[in-house]
Image (tube, rainbow, N blue to C red; front, side):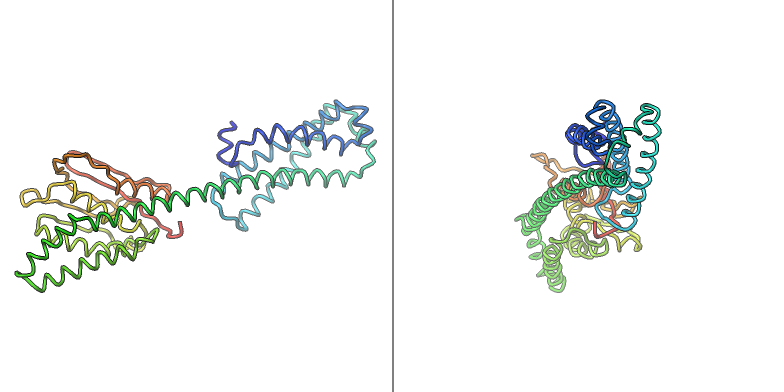
Length: 350
């Protein structure tokens, strides 16, 4: 019970219940019945005060849990304010009337204790409301404090993962094998086709420039990601000369939505890195949309690798997606295909 409530209250409130109920019971009993009536009928007065305190406490605690279930984001707006104020007033009236009826049945003479109290009933009523408001704001204060702390921790984690992703992306692009293969392709092009060699250098430059431009972005549009991918695909097609085929079937109406920057390039890199690419075994890569996921699929023809892959790129993509959406990256592998599904994000502000 308490563990389930902790998720919506933002903290384990058992310590607060253990300290708060006895203290408020004592204050409410003296405040409502006065010192004289309290001293003469201590046990009944405390019992009445305890029943009122427990009823209010757990009723409003239940209200807070449902309030946070309904509004599970961190934004405070007019709709949220109207909801909580109206529910607080309604619950206060309902609990008040219900408890008065219950106490009248249990303690028929309790009105005499009220009459012995010199304090105005209105003052006692206002004081009671102030105590309820104080407890409510303590709960909400602790909730928002803990939420802010958790958000800050997650922000720091995201920054760390993003930094690792930047490093990994740059490391993949500037590793000796990539440069060696690109320069070898360029060397072979220069004597055969100088115009194509010039275009190859331009596309290579554009690939590096794109990485530097988007590396600080949390999200980019699918259209921008595909534009950034064009240069890299050109380099691959030029290098492998028909041994790799990439088909893009992403509908235009999805291109204004968002994904992680360089995510598609990393997935294509992984496909090239871990699969045989030859004339007899060409690599087929397809990009398409399926049920609000952007899918990257390639035929599976694994290389015989001496060391097991660490899949750092795919792991970092998964980690970063956890901070952007509640949907997971889906990875599926069969004997014939390797498929990665990236959730399409609707709102760039997430």
